[in-house]
Image: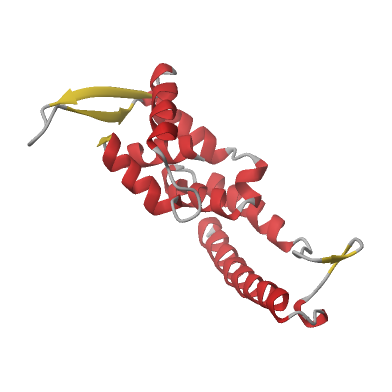
Length: 174
């Protein structure tokens, strides 16, 4: 997820590490804070793989800063990851939001629709946070008001997402 976010934000524009960290934190930080000890090793891995380039620019007040840009190989890698997201990128809501934030960079509407169809298929499967054996429980079946709240909120969110997915897929197929 972190590498996808790095590639996605750098696809938009060159950034220095601090600005990149701010943008990733805005996208995912409420769930998974981005520490420098995580971000900079990921940047180095992507740079070593030839997906990023680093240039030194004079700082406006302080020391020089390193500006990161995406290489052509990095652009291709981002598009590959968007076209073929891992299953956990489809099923984990926070990972899904990272894919969705950059899906516009996949310039083939049929490929975009295919990714959305995978999420749609996942959401259409019966599921719950709570089960009676193998049977998913519905909110109306629970006496616990807090667990009922979890399922009620999840159902409303899923309905909104299902509606958006169907509308967007129709538009992309259009």
